Structures are given as structure tokens and as C-alpha cells.
Length: 198
Image (cartoon, rainbow, N blue to C red; front, top):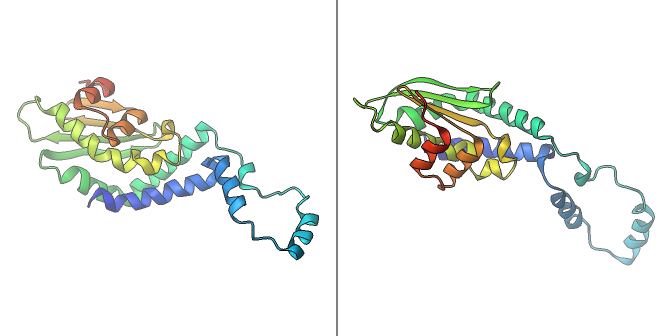
């Protein structure tokens, strides 16, 4: 399965989140200005008596989500994505990699808001482990940290990514994964920012 088949579910989730109060006030004002019908002499008189009343359903008056609320909603959406698409993600982004001998862990830890992946490699030495970890992270980055997510929520609300290849572990925060999705992160920068602990 390609990343393109998983992305529509995440786009829908991001749009749902944006509609839950994560949008900005300018969108609400723009919506109000575009829904006003053209005026005629008869309708402008009738509207002048009703337009003085304050609107109680203005989209711009909806309270924005706090960072914690937003992070919790994103975690719930990500958990749902894993429930519905975990096997497809595993097949398309992990098991299809010819350098992966076995996938030993693949889940979303909702408590820590972390996508967790662990694999054993086909390498006889660990020389290429950082490169493999980087490649796996780069495969996942567009799915969970691409523009569909960053356009709807704060970057800090997106999950973390943990990848372990053989005995080496890397933990990337959301801004690092966004940079990787935008192809702004070299392998050396990935290792530096995500660590490489044994």
C-alpha cells in the first residue's frame, strides 16, 4: 500500500479537527462576507431591522482549542488511524522494505503520543543502521507530519516518532518529523536531532 492511499483518511481527520475550533478567525469572517446575498432596495430595508441583533452563531466566536486539548484530539485521531490502517501502514512502509528482516514492534502509544516502530535489519553489521532508521522515518514523515496535518493543527500537537533498528533507537519530536516531511533534514541532522542510543 502506498502512502497516497493512507493520506485521504488523515486529510479527512485534519479537516474534522480544523472544524472543531482549530481554525483561525479570518476564515470565519471570510465565510460571513461570502454568504451575504446581493442587496436590493426591498431587502436592504428588511435587513436593516434584523442586522442590529448580535449573531449568536458566528464561527469566529468559537473558542480555539488549548494546546493540550488539540494534542489530545490529534492523539485520538492518530490512534484511530492505527486501528483502521495499521496493517496497511506496516505492509506499505515497513515490511515492503527489503532491508527489514522482521518488524518487532509497530503501534501508537497514545499515552506518550508516540508512533513506535522497531525492526531487525538484514545487515550483518550496524554500519548502515542510521541510514535505515532515517529511511524508515522519511517514509512515515509525509503520512503523519505532512502538510495536511500542519495546515490544521499546531506542529507541537503532532505525535513523536520512535524508530529502533536492531539495537539502535531514535526518538524524533514533531518539528523534526515535519522538517523531514518537507525534505529539509539530512541523515546527519536526523541522527543529531533524534539521537542514536543503544
